[in-house]
Image (cartoon, rainbow over all chains, first blue to last red; front, top):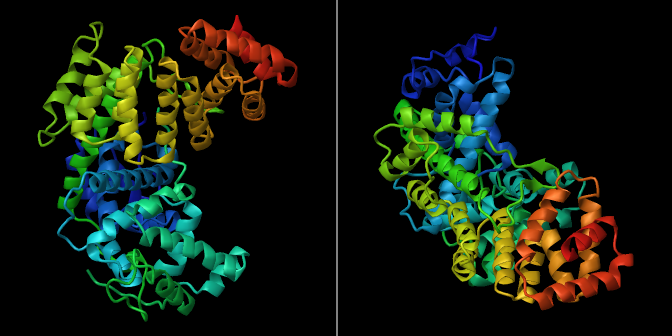
Length: 205
Length: 311
């Protein structure tokens, strides 16, 4: 481990490590003014990985992980290290959502932006959004990205077709598969035929 | 929350929604959608970012993950010391599982114990970890204790799988199967499913049902195409049930994916021998007969595994 030293970029001053400080003492300077531009990094991560997570929650979790693991930051690749924490935060949130859904935890009372996306775009009842979000995160990233571009970003199908080099029918067929799978979330029949959508997943050990 | 939705859904997509929503089971279009100006990026939807209180709240979750992960690592460390398990050190064909040296592991546990806030209600879990640090030479808690504590801190399918592996090592394959089937019923992600199927196979194998074990190993290899263990087991089981075609198939797969020079091959064969050593004599005889019959049609890895199993 190597305590971080101030790189030339003053944005990273917030990462100066003092061994007498705990994560709670570090947090205020990471939050104030967002010197690490973490909110943008989180938004980019959501887009690049096509994840339906609450940006504010991802930002807060990323801040907490950075504060907790600050002594592990290496001076030569601070930016990469921050990106890894954002990715770790997203993975934690995706996992937590899966288990909360499975264990039937009550939905949070606060309005969640991704609910607005699923409700506003697909006309899904708010009570179903967590379950559908869990299903979505188990789709292969290629399918998630196409959905993200067409539904979340609102790109035209012709634009997606042109950029991907696939035929329009192929793109629509892919979207049909994904949206159908999401819309039948929770049904036994859908579960039986969903293996092709499952992600590679993590290793057990 | 300030929504600023600037885009318009492609009309073809709206048609697709309508078509799919006509299925009565579909949850689409149950509430009105916004056809124009419908969707914006999540960044636009939520521009404020987190405040300090939210970050402090999330810090507690970070500690919960940390404690749970240490407990799951404790499970793995204990499992590697148990016998009769097919607990490969190869997480994939080209990546060895990293097992931290004892000193590093204890260092991380100490740091967590020092830093974990009181708000984390995990007394039992922390006591277990504390016992590892205070008395490192003493008899360690059981895997099921670590796994149970991990589950109470933060739910995770791996905890139940590790508890099942301990049961397998304790010659309780039926109880292990029950736990593993419970995990599979919850539809875990693909890698964990593969791991469950592999150990269901080991349980069935232990109970003498080699045909069922072959199916489980086959399922494990289909879902976990990056791990060598299920393929070796499937090859061994196919030989034991005199299924020439499958044995040749799995041998060829091993040849393609593993290669004879793989640094973990000897270790994998050793693990496989541990699983097969307690088999009934007639199973060993059948495997040997099949192997001798098809040996010249197998690749170098298939021959090496077969020869090791019939020694």
